[in-house]
Image 1 (cartoon, rainbow, N blue to C red):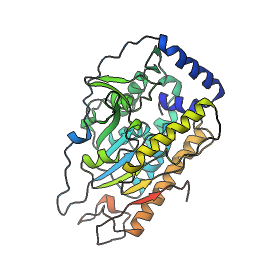
Image 2 (image 1 turned 135 degrees about the vertical axis):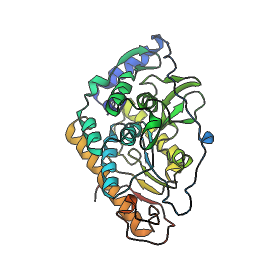
Image 3 (image 1 turned 60 degrees about the horizontal axis):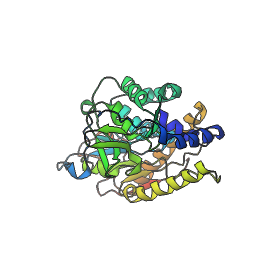
Image 4 (image 1 turned 135 degrees about the horizontal axis):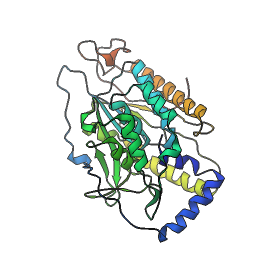
Length: 343
């Protein structure tokens, strides 16, 4: 998927532990050169103007894809399940790994093309190492790869409204990136602190959106969503029992991230939370397995939601988003979560 996501997955490998710790110790002696501003124009939550669906029209549906490293392969399976159910989002918002998959989908790529791009990318080609105090991966190769996969199209020209979420390093605020080229926005949304260099913009520096908005439901609402389907690939993941320094730090980060994210995730109408627990995310078989886990969890969550409440995706006339509904009359809706790993 992306260089910094792979770095997360590999930090538990014995050889990487020593390399990572040595790099941290030596970073203080490295260059402090800051990257040039990128032309990004982030927006805060309060700066967005929410729009409401007109009476009689189908509610606006948003798909929110959360961060979680190489578990992001599960998002591809979620997309497949949504398409089979006839759900067509009007808005897609993603954080970190979710921004990679979300941008590809919102740009008009088919789920099959996204799947092939994810499975075919050579992770080594995305690793552009540097020697600076802010991190040891630049992230430029990731941005270039994303723009190559998606094409030379700006976010505001995507057929589906899209935005990535990053975190302002100085203020600690989550920021929405809905303009410019997707590669740079995703680079910022995926900039794991201490691993990948922060991405500069006119107002400061941006790092991984998962720091402040792991599953950005509130931004989707602010962009006009009436119904939010959110996919959390991280917080249900199993934790290692190891007590090594990287493992302990990883568990602490997991706890903090998910405690911060929980209230926001609770605001989704449908929360899909697959348990992505596979042998190794670095091999193709495991990646395909993660896609299947995301697919099955999404199918189950949608079925549960539609069986326990009226389907608010329906409009007065049949629409593609209602293909799997059962003809309910009441449009009240309810929140439904699915966190199991399989059917």
